[in-house]
Image (tube, rainbow, N blue to C red; front, side, top):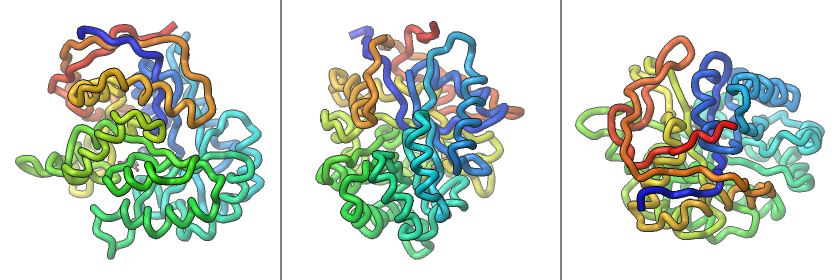
Length: 348
Ligand code: DOR
Ligand code: ZN
C-alpha cells in the first residue's frame, strides 16, 4: 500500500498551551485533526466556564484563517469545583469534559484534587448531566513506585469511583499498563481510555538508551515491554473503548534538558502519522480509521467527520527543533525518519 485515506481523525487528549507557545503549536494539531480535547492545565488552571470560554477564543484566534478545527474545551477539577459550575459547563455547549489531576501528579497539577471524596458533589452532578470525567490516573505518593502509580490509582481510586457513580462517563487518559487495559476492557459501560503514540512505540528502555533521554520522559512514564504489547493489542484490537489521544505536551527545550526536566513529549507534528506506523507494524492498518476517527467521536456523542485525510507511506524527517514561543522545542523523532506522511493538510 502506498497511500491510505481515512475519515478525518480527532485527538481526544492534547496540550495546546497558551500565548506565543499556543500560536507555535496549534497548527500541527489543526492540520490533522478535526477536533481535539484541550487539556486545562494552564497556570492558572482553567477552573471555570468563563476561563474556558476565554481560552477557547485565544485558541480560535491563533488558527490560520480558514482552518476548520474545533477545540473541545475541558474544566480543571479542584477540591472546590461546585455542582453549579458543572451545570454551567454542561449547558454552555463547548465544554466536553472535566479533568481530574490528583494534586502533585504532573505538570501544573498543584491545584488538583487532594482527596477524591472532596470532589463527590461535582462528580454527582456530572453523573446527572452526562458530563465526562477525564482522568490522569496516577497516585503521586512518595511511597508508591513511579512505575506502579497507574496500577495503584486504578485499584485504590478509580475502581471504587466507577462503582460509586455507576452512570458517570469516564475516560482513563493515556493508559500505560496491561493492568489499565484489562481494567478498561472489563469495566461497566461508559468507561473508555485514550492511548498515546509514545506508549505504543516505546518501552521504558527508551528513557535510558545510552544515557538519560529527557525527551522520552512523560507522565505516566513509559512502562515495560509487556505493557506496550498489551497497549498495542488494545489499540489495534477493534474495541471501541480504546481510542486516539496523543497527549502531545510541548515544553521549551531548556525546560526538558535540565537537572529537573518537565514531563511531556511533543508529537503533534506527526500526530496521526505515528499511529499509522504503529498500525502498519501490527498489520492492522485496516483498523486505524476506527481507532482514530470513529470510537472517540462515538464515545463523546459527536458525529464522525465526513471529510478525509490521506496518509502516504513515504518516509520524511521532522526537523530537530521547532520554534516555540520565544524559544524552541525538540519534537519526537526530530532528525529521524517517520514512515508515513500527511498528503493534504486539510485547510479549507
Ligand atoms: O507528560 C505529561 N505532560 N503528562 C501530563 O500529564 C502533563 C503533560 C504536560 O502538561 O506537560
Ligand atoms: Zn496530558
